[in-house]
Amino acid sequence: MIKPDAYPHIGKIIDIVIANGFQVNRAQMLKMSEEMVQMLFADLGGRPHFKDFCKFMLSDVVVGLEIVGESSIERMKMIAGPESPTMAKEGTERDRMSIRAVFGTDMTKNVIHVSGDEMSYRREMEIFFNERFLRDVSCQTAVLNNCSLCIIKPHSVQSGLTGKIIDRILEEGFEISALQSFFLDRSIAEDFFELYKGILPDFNQMID
Image (cartoon, rainbow, N blue to C red; front, side):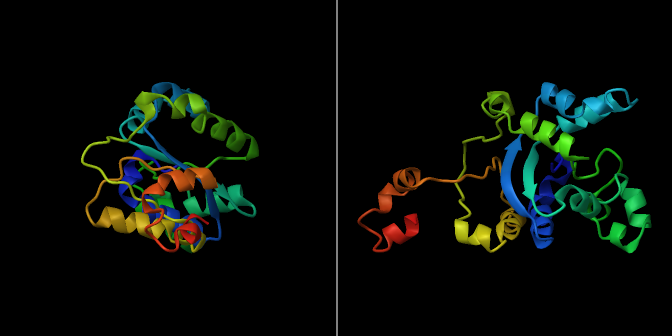
């Protein structure tokens, strides 16, 4: 999960993940509810600064990613780095190159959350990608005002360019108000691009 403090670096973080040989299987931007935070981070509930942590997690959007790859949990923990960005910056060479060392500020604003083990991954995925929250208007981030739609097409995803494209959009001064990954079936793709049917000579190839 990319935390609120790392919004400007969404593209760069996704690019690092892809560059390390992972595939992003699912992606979703959400404004988490207090219930979600309490459920996702129930193990932190007894810590003295948990209330401040909750406030921080509710302060802006987060991006949840399902990351697929060999030994994904252990490798992602290494790529993320120590939970303390300060320790990461003072650690080994690998720690100093980690996501938290590069983009992190402190123990709360430490950029990224990674599931600790397989059991945690399954529980957290069930909460974050739960249809109840995805359909909750208060969790949705799209503003639908003064906006345009950008679709990153399959060939760009397959070429590992997703992070670079997102980063370029943010660098150009745009705000990404909503983000989600989709697998389209043919009928949906045809409906979406119906405007171009009979106009583009390679319409069928585009749908494929």
